[in-house]
Image (cartoon, rainbow, N blue to C red; front, side, top):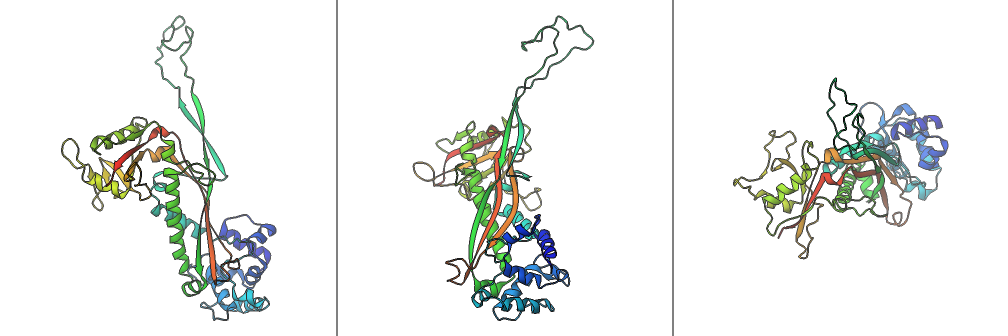
Length: 407
């Protein structure tokens, strides 16, 4: 495989525009050597693609086993024979510890198909992300113009002389067509790096390959999803916690439950949102499972239960409902608030219309099995990163109910 063919293959796999210098920052000369030993038509992108071509990660897995003196698991023709020659020219300790995607520069980008799959899995582990409007980002920050108010419509008489007419309450001159002065603002959506590190034994890599990819995908998705929810709900907006979460943003509709948590508190929470977002299609309510348990026993003024779990196929999304609005369970909402450390919160909002999630880049997985202390313990560290952001257009479109005693 020539340098140009190798660059073309990695451009397809990563979606990046690469040149020789950038390629050097992604892979080292040892991995480049074993890749060049393969014919480009013999290698497919992804681990489990059908057809005669060998999967990209499976090929690298066979290279690792070959370098450790083990037989390859998949047929690769004469390509791995040529790769074996490249491996035997390396120092023995480096041959033994060659791993999939390992680079001294610390950079192996997983194929785009896997990156998309992990980001889709994140939705399953994040209660907030799936509710919001998702925006692809081509830069570190994207800015949206906003209109905060100032527009008024006026009736204009037809076929009438308005020369001497003064528009009521407009402060404008006689005969002047009424106008409004809009107030414009900006909403900045910034992508931040969210990372998770997993350390895996090399024995697990060898015994589970390529199945370990699926295990790591689930671990990455679960951890990233939960971390994103924590940030979106109660992030501090600091250097090490860069997203300013809803708990810190909501001021207009920061409500408190009564001495006894009751239906009026829930109704007030929901209609606090509708009061500022009257055209919202729905107002999802987010709560911890402990709050959900309380809602399941609550009744309205007509002695009807306000919490209703949908039967399969009855609702389009099969989500439970609280007083007609979707209820979303989120275990990342705190339950140790208040003086007794036994209080929780409910959040509600026009998430579809007023909350944005920006995705700057898909999943990037970096590995480096030669770094200490992992080398000494026969382990490989995987560092997964995504660049993602969260912002709300107007805090008044959201509400928070605090002081709900759970025990």
